[in-house]
Image 1 (cartoon, rainbow, N blue to C red):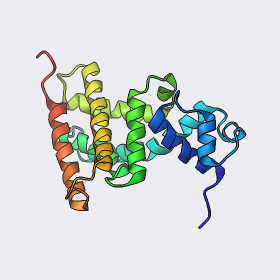
Image 2: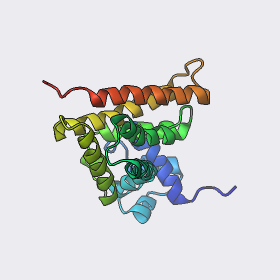
Image 3: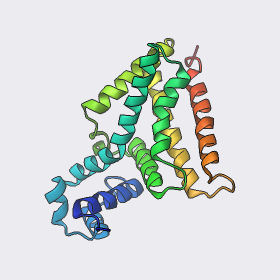
Image 4: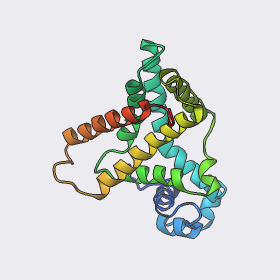
Length: 209
């Protein structure tokens, strides 16, 4: 089996370190040392540390975004007004698929998403592109039709909560070996529990109502 090329080694190392230490806490030297590359490699392949961060996040997020888009397309092909539960399943389901319990790669993905949500560095919010914005806006519109009483601000807050809850759950599942929770059946059960919980949270009355 061929060893990973330098670009892939840098992406793998940076994903791990950005997830653990954040953007500002991760130096280029730490990345290149872990990757077994020279200091100039980051500039050669990505232009800068910020460019490397964008590449890392896009590698992780693009499969999730593509699956979320496909799930929403399937729902809207059936009905113009999907239920909240169906929308939560289409939005959160790909997060479970890309962050499977007991999988080291899934754990890194979940840690990185948690870091993106909580890291104060502006660079952590500069990676989105038109495709990501389009998927976000389509879900906001669909949830808005299903939950017309919510303000746009509270709706977006709740959608961000779906991301945070799912990512934190996946981290915890990986970090803590709970007896009886490592089988595929238990993994599917956790997914169903999460969808039920998140759909209820999304459907709660507007705050103050």
